[in-house]
Image 1 (cartoon, each protein chain N blue to C red):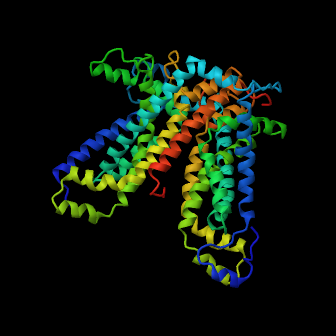
Image 2: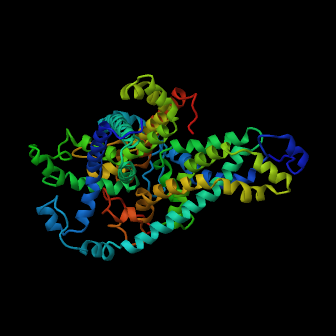
Length: 300
Length: 246
C-alpha cells in the first residue's frame, strides 16, 4: 500500500488513479469487521450449537439444528409463505410502480403533486404502517365499511387464514409501490425525448412506443427494482408482526418471524440462526442471479 | 406531442383516482389521530369534527414520546454522521487505490448487504454488554453505523468512480497533501451523493424498530426510558424479552 505518491513526477505519469493510502479505509473497515463481519461469523458458529441466547452454556451439537429445522413442518410452512409473499409482492409492486411511473411521466397537470403523494408511504416507518393497516382491516373497520357498501359483507382479510397472506402482501405493495415508481421514473426521464418522438413520427401508437421503445430501455431500473423488492420481501418482518403476528395460526408466518420467535422468544438462538442462514442463502441466490442476468449493465 | 388531448385528460382522471386510493390510509391515520376512540368505533370513516388533541397529550405523557423522540433524533444524527465520515473516506480509498486492494476491500464490505443482521445481533449484544454499553443508546448508534455501512460505501464508491481524477491531480501538482485533496477537493464534489446517503441512511435508521427494542428494552417490560420512536409506538410485538442490563 505504501507507494511513492509523494514524488510529483510519479503522480503525473498516472492518469486515472492516484495512490490513496490505506488508512483512509481503516476506520470503516474497523467498524465493519467489529460490528458486522465478526458478529456474523460468531452467529454462524452458534448455528451449530444449542446456545439459548442467554447465559454461557454452549454445547456444539453439529448439524442437529439443521436436521431439526428440515423435519419441522413449521419451517416448510414459513418457507412457502416467504416465497409466495416475495414473488407476489415483487410482481404486484413493480407492475403497480411501472403503471404509476407511466402515469406521472405523462403530460398530466397534477403530476408533481401525485409524485409526492404516491411516494409518501415509502418514508413511513414499516411498523407504524403495519399497525395502521391492522386498524384499517379490522372487522367493521374502515375497509370493511367500504366493502360492505360495495356489497361484500363480513369483510375480514386478516382474520381468515386463507386470505391473511394477501392482506399482508397488500400492505407491503401499498407502502413500496411508490419506491418502484421513483426508480422507473428516473429511468424514463433518462430516455431522450427524440427517440420516442421519432417512433411517434414513424406511426407508432402509445402502446407500441411503450413496448418497443420505452420498456427495452428500462432494463437497468427493472433490474434494480426486482432485486431490491425481492431482497426486502424475503426479509419481511415488521409488517407481519404489526398486522398478524404470523397468524391466524401460522398462516402468515415468514422465515424472519419464525427466526425471531425461535431466537428471541423461545431462547433457541442457535436454531434461529440456522433459519437465518436459509434466508441468507435465498438472498445470495437472488443477488447472484441478478448479477448474471444483468451483467452487461452497471447498477448506476 | 405536446398538446393536452382528451387522452391526457383520461390519464389525469385515472391517476387522481389511483392517488386517492393510495392516500386513503394516510387520511385515516390523520383522521383517527384527531378523534376519540368511541367516535372512531361508531363511525370509522368519519372526519374529525372538532380539534381533539387528547390522543397527542396522552401519547406525550404516558407513552413517553418526548424522550423517545430525543433518543431517535440523537441515534439517527450521530449514526449518519459516522457513516458519512468513515464511508466517504473508505470509498475514496476503494475508488482510487493503486492495485487491486481497493476493489477487493470494496467487495468485502459491499457483500455485507446480503447478510441478514439477525445473525450477528446477539453476539454483538453480548460484546456491547461486556464493554459496559448494554442498554446504552451508543450501542444502537454503533450497530446502525455498521448495518448501513455497506449501502453507504456502495453509493459513495459508485459516485466517486464517475468523478474525473484530473481535479485531484491538479491539486496534487499544486502541492496539496492526500488529506487536503480529500477534504478540499473530493469532499465538495461528493455533496450530491452525500445528500442521498443522509436521506437513505437517515430514513432506514429512524425507522429501525427491532434493534432499539432488543438493545434498549421492550417498552412494556423494561424500566428504562431509553427507547426510540419506532419501539415506543408499540406495546412490543410478540412480547420481546427485556434487555437484562436495562
